[in-house]
Length: 452
Image (cartoon, rainbow, N blue to C red; front, side, top):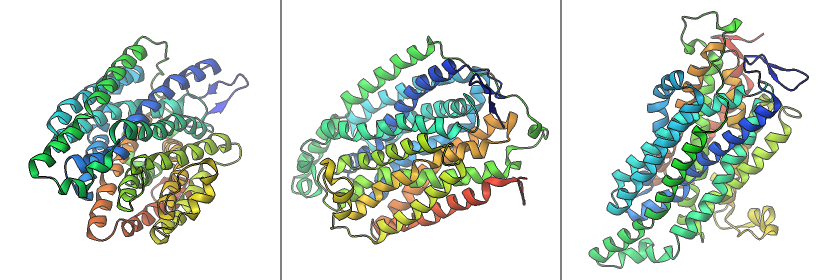
């Protein structure tokens, strides 16, 4: 799927004929959708410890929040791709917003009943709508301009996505986690069973208003996108590399291996963002509900670096290699660093007035910086050369988001068996796989042979 940029700045060779103005307008619309996806996604980081209290869960049970959310990407990815062939990108985006709105509404009866299984159903419905959105907007943003600048465009979209991740925990904490100390494990255990259940039900009720507002906002934006002038790109034309029409997308090693690398990446990204609150709570860090903001702020910084550096100063492959090495080193820091000393955070963010956190928590947050450029680098590397198989390849990559369902639950299992900090060792093989894909795997064009 090689493309070049002509002197007018058009994406020559992408079959869209997009002008520079159309690219900017398209990026603004898609940026709004990425912000919405980020808002809903990174709410989980604060929702996990919240529901752990409301539903009286251990770490393994609490992290079924991430399982119910991210497994929808595996279950719904292929149906979403099939639907997009009928509706096109734009209608797929509006349908996705509508399904998300329904999922947000389901939080109201879930909060009123305080039943964990109802929360999981609501999360699965929300994520099903997001799967349709992701299947549409990721290839859309890749095809909106030249292939060489695809990572830069996705990095810009990441600023919207992760920027929402910075804001959400702060908002959630102010609305949901006020006076949370009165709902601590010790405080609840001191109550009689009836009073304990009443306290948890009262805490659960706090979710009704924000999720009702979220549903309303999603339906309003759905109508806005439907009537907007956002251009619907035509299907990807065939290229010379698509001559094997009857072969499965599994014939493309760069795609299959990229899917595995993306599976590992999403898992470590979710672990870094959604378990940091649980880990901070275990270490008695004050305002543990906002710790996801630390990880997201590091990701925002990483996306800014990616938007500026790629491809001008850093190739997509180079960005992926650098990210993997940083992930390996920071994982060692999380697993072996001090859970009491706060020197690292004092040096890095103390000057800005940000509350200090233990070194291990800060290393976990810094994984956001290491992770930031992985998603935007893997997508164009994995989809390169797929031609008419791009839509199916995109669906396969979307299915890899299930790493965010499976790996955090594995982490929760190890954390309950041993220690929360020791369980972070499982991130090492994930970053090693990403490193191998950046160094070798993405170059393969047939099994056993690299690209020439």
